[in-house]
Structures are given as C-alpha cells and as structure tokens.
Length: 331
Ligand code: 8YV
Image (cartoon, rainbow, N blue to C red; front, side, top):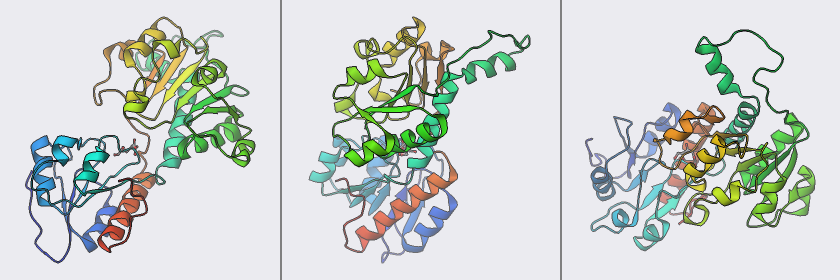
C-alpha cells in the first residue's frame, strides 16, 4: 500500500485502515487529507509502523493490532488513534498514553445493531435455525415430522447477561419486550435501582450464581486480559444442560476448546457465536458441531451502524484537531 503524505499541509493527514461507508468518507474528506487503504485488507505490521510515522491521525479497526512495540517506536508522527469500533483491546492504551497519542472509540453507534444481533443468535440457537437450514440445503429434508429439530421456547426463560453496559441493557429490553424473557445480570458495578426495576433485572453477585440460574447466557463484557477465558470448563460446568451461550462481545472471553467440548458432550445445549479467539480462524471443532451457530463478526454490520460509527469517529477527530477533548476519549 502507498503511504502518501499529505498534499495540503494545512489540513491534518488521516489514514483510514479499512474501507468505510461512502457518507463517512465524504465527511472526512471535507476536513482531512484522507488516505484509505485501497486493498481493504488488514495492514501489515510494517505498514502500520510507517503509517504511525507518516500520518497525523489513524482510524484503525479491530483488525489492526497496535501494541506497545509499535506505539513505543521511534519517530512517530501520529497524535490520535480514532478507533472505528467500541472495543479497543487491540490498542495498548498504556503505550499510547506514554507515546502521547490520544485514543478514542465509538461506543454508542453500534448498540442497536449489536443488541439486534444478540436476539438473532438467541433465536437461531434456541430454534436450531442453522442446523435446519443445513438439513434443507443439503437435500436431507424428508418432510415435516412431529419431533423433528425440536428447539426451546424462550418465553418466560431467564436471559443472564454477563456485563451490563449499553449493549447488554438494550438486548435485555428487546428480549423482555419482544420475547417475554426474564432478565438477570452480573457485572462489575451494580445498575441503579431504577434501571433494575425498569427491566425487572435480577442482580447476581457472582458469575457462578448467574450461570446456574440462566437459560440463555449472553456475554457483554469487554475483551482483554481481565476477562480472558472467563467462560472455561469450570464456569461452563455451572450452566444448565439445557442452556445456551451467546457471545457478541469478544472471542477471548471464551475458551473455545472448552466450549467445543461442552457442546460436543451436551453439557450445554447450544451456542450462538459472533466473535472468536483467533479471528478470522474459527476452531475446527466448533465448525463440526450442529449445536453451534457461527456468524462472522456481524455485530455492528448494518449500514446504519457502520455509518453512525464513522460519524462518531469523525466527531472525535474534529474535537481533537479543534483543540478540544474528544467526546469518546479512552486514553
Ligand atoms: C466492530 C465491534 O465492527 O465495535 C466493536 O467493538 O466488535 C465491531 O462490531 C469492530 O470492532 C470494528 O473495529
């Protein structure tokens, strides 16, 4: 990829590491000297390093690993990493801080899309939708039968949320209003009494107690070292044998091998996953399992959400280059 330096030196230079919706590019081009990665493939480490030395600003995504060795390299020009996405565990915040590089994210823009995808996975997993479609497409459907592909009703069942941030609360609202589910949660900080009572949400002080009480467990905590393999063979053993695990958060939260084992042995009934430990690689064991619904990180993949994410990112850049604190500064 060609790392052109800016032509108009009066405007900040900005590298966008992956292709973004047209409306976002149009807005950014009005204020910045914009370069877009023409291949729309993850940038190599060397290209990322050159970019950090060439541009005033970078707009990275989850596919750019900006670790300490890159961010603490000599001769960086970059002053802001305006991440396109809510999660930012692919950026070493401590290193960014010591390199004097500001980091921002886009926390609000993808709440609806990701909550919708959570509902999709709950229904797909509980009604064996992927499995049913495979039967049909593979020419194996022999016609309706009373005990064929029986799933689980979710009405009246308990949705246990691990983490209770924006996306978890929105998923809870939808699961309650549209599906008639009961809400329970476990998170670092307890929600206000008003929030709990609006959702009739039952707070669990321990993860184990939430896992034991839930028919569907949905993960909404951040990724990173603190939550790595929070769901492992021990915690999976706390879940009901009829339970479903949903992950729209980060792949690192789940020990994929332990999950594949639990699904194969029917220790839990099913899983609906949108994120993986080693994206884009997905464990071969999981791919073999009919009771695993596997989506390719589609959480925020709507035109509305991706456009709103880009606009929120542009707001952060505009604030920064106007000398104001960006609204979504995380470092
Ligand atoms: C994004 C996400 O599309 O924003 C997040 O945290 O997981 C995704 O929906 C992706 O991270 C873009 O960087």
